Image (cartoon, rainbow, N blue to C red; front, side):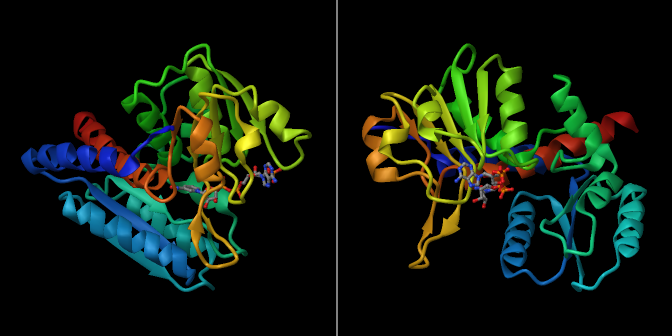
Length: 281
Ligand code: NAP
């Protein structure tokens, strides 16, 4: 039976250490979150981020806009936050309302305050194999989880299912930067299971039930990023957990795997950007 990659346990350890560090800081990091529209899941995520930040001693503000907010208004607010010395990290909650160009808005964030690591500057650094100000939260959380369990990455064949800018592409690049041999799969990939069966490490970031027991070889490390509700309203991941955990060596559960690591990485990134802002003054 596979060993569980316990994201909750590692998140709690990270929070404990972070809280102690922040407690000792004379000034505190501050995170500004922009929420546009009334997507109920986004509201829950934003509230969780705010509550978690506050528990750790991070100042947190949420700036809300109705779904008909103009792109210019968002850009103006971001400029204001970029110039505000009291704000050290900025996050734009996705998805944005459809009439807004997500990339333009994200790129308006100063790279030094881009806590999600999604601006062209930070992703450009990542894809050039250089150090961005911070790494995107979910991919960073996945790598922290693998490292916590001493899972070797160098020389391994990592297969990533999903090629989004948020998860699939950056996690693939981070694995490549750590000398894995990386294959990226997506909705047009043919014979998916033939490829996944050659994986030493399989990362699934789809949001659909795609990975069954026939998709993995023995002792594969399986990281399930996907999260969605099935037809019965049950929260689940991409991977058939019960089947796959029989032959995997390690597996991350949903919930309790990558999700907690994403919020842990967000808080780590907030603290990192703050520390760097103090050095540059
Ligand atoms: P996304 O932008 O919708 O990307 C999904 C990817 O899956 C796309 O690249 C798509 O391929 C691919 N795909 C779709 N159907 C497929 C299939 N049948 N076989 C192979 N590939 C397929 O989603 P995302 O933002 O990357 O997120 C992925 C999942 O992770 C979602 O469930 C999301 O909720 C979850 N997530 C969880 C966390 C967390 O903290 N736990 C964080 C972020 C995301 P194409 O490019 O060809 O369309």
